[in-house]
Amino acid sequence: MKQILFSIALLFLTVQGIMAQQPLPRGAMSYTIMTKPNNIVYNDSIFKGSTQFKQLFYRTRNPEIIDAYLKHQRNKITGQLFGFAGAVTLLVGVNNLSGSNKSMGWTLIGSGFLASIAGGYFNLLGQNHLLTAVDLFNQQHKKSTVSLGLGKQSAGIVYQF
Image 1: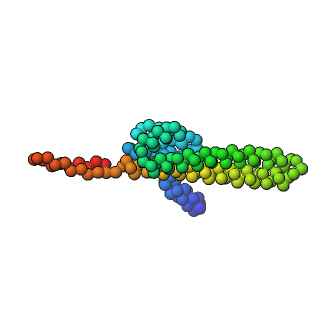
Image 2: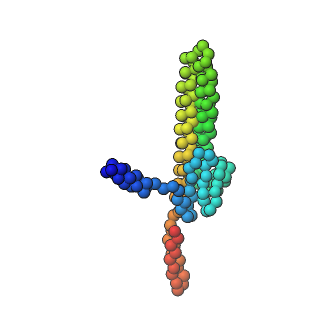
Image 3: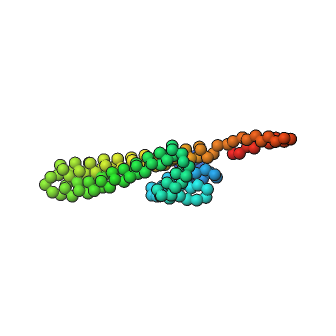
């Protein structure tokens, strides 16, 4: 009985820290990590795909953001190529297992598996670069400023956040 109560208490404490939804802060760009397609939410608009991302990031004219976006594109394409090549190599390897050259079949299966892992790694790197571009965008556009205005008989201070 004590073990059941301890398990329920442990489960209750564990569940308290889990969030089912990703927060979308107001006025900031948010990258929602999904398998396909990648989504960016900014100013109550959803941007999907490379053409919309390109328009969004090139508008900033910030070379760091554009470079992170281009790295995302390169890694995404490389990951897709490795994943496709790995799947094809894996299928050819399985087909060769039924023939007389089983060692070649196992070699192709191992190579296809490694190529698929490499494809997943490059896709993960691509997502990381897109997240970096979003973070750079938020750093650039979420700066608070203090301005001081002086007139002949007045002075004013403006705090923009």
